[in-house]
Image (cartoon, rainbow, N blue to C red; front, side):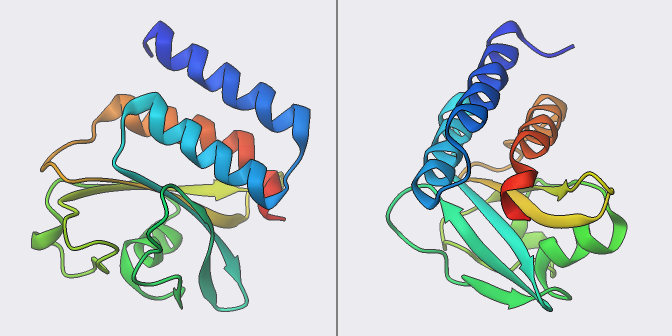
Length: 153
């Protein structure tokens, strides 16, 4: 069962997306809403373009170290392979991790699927604390991903 505040945040995100469509600035605002809702350090939205993951939007002003990378690489690649979210409690212990920021310690990545259940992108949240993510985060991010996946098509 998700917390009431988490559900309210999801309603706000859904309403915001429905109200204004999928412009670049709106998607950046959605990324920021997702980050603020659970106090994440960083949130990124990646789409799959040809054989690469490409950043669509992210929070903050500092771009990630890998704005584009092959779909076979990183934790995003592992999520694409299994179709399931991945929570990594300590990225320094996972050889698949591609460092976005040198201060990242834990990460959660959720696949974003279209109406035909094809994965069209990834929703990625990062923390500077070890073991920062749990089941509530997974549920929240899966629902948030569902609200914005159509923006990647």
